[in-house]
Each structure stands twice: as structure tokens, then as C-alpha cells.
Image 1: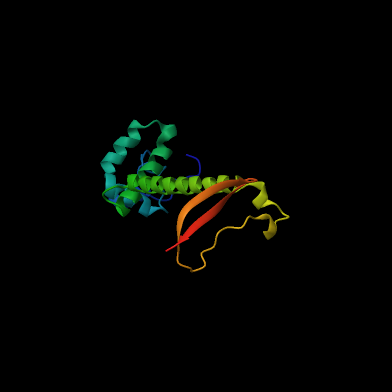
Image 2 (image 1 turned 45 degrees about the vertical axis):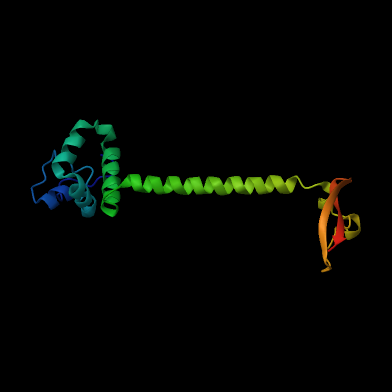
Length: 165
């Protein structure tokens, strides 16, 4: 019973709430200290004192503190979300993790795309004279009838053939 207060001075939170005398062999005393009355109140409201007592007697002594902490967490979650309890919190975290994994995959795809840009466009000595001339729509009445693709270094160049209307 490390870190627990002396038993001779006061009743545990469970015995105070249940309005009974706290005995020296009280099963609740090591886990529901008198300075934490709301912890037992939440656990009692969700599970009931009798059920908590049964659980604690069935759990090995070395695991009881973990069991009480789990019961307290589940009771808190169940009071916040009566339908789903801690499963709702787990589902929310799972959805958030899925969203973050999706965002990470998108970021990795963008990174892969940017690292795959040809050296001609990523060069520090970039100048506009190294780029081929691309067709520009000048507002005249012409229809793009055919396109020819031609390889120019590592950049595809599109030549436009247009015919008047």
C-alpha cells in the first residue's frame, strides 16, 4: 500500500459515501483515499459498491490498483458518454489517427512528386531562356485542331497547329 495515507485518522472515500464505519480490513481504503471522494462517487454511480467490491476481491492484490484506475477511467468516460463510454473515446482517437495517416500519405505523395521534378526545372541556375516556347492563346478565332508532342531534353514541348474558323 505505497503512497496511501494512514488508516487510523479517517475513513476512506467509499465508507464516507456509503455512510459506514471504515474497518481496518476495508477493501476500498487502499484505493479510494478520503481526499478523493469524487473518484469513488463516479465508480459507485456507474458500477455500484457491491460490484466494485466483488471485482477487487477477485483481482490479485498486485493488480488491484490498476483495476481501480481502469474502473475510474471507464466510469468517467461512461458519465461523459453514457452510450459509448471509453469506446467512444477510442473510436474518436482511431478516426483522428486515420485522418492523420491519410494526411501523411498525401504529404508523402507531394514530396515524392516534387523530388521527381526534372533537374532542368530544379536547377539553381534556372533562367527563362532554358524553357521552350509554349503556345499562348492570343484571342484570335482559331481552333486547336491537332497537337504534336516532341521531346526537347527532359521536357515535353507541345506544338500547336491551329486553323481559322
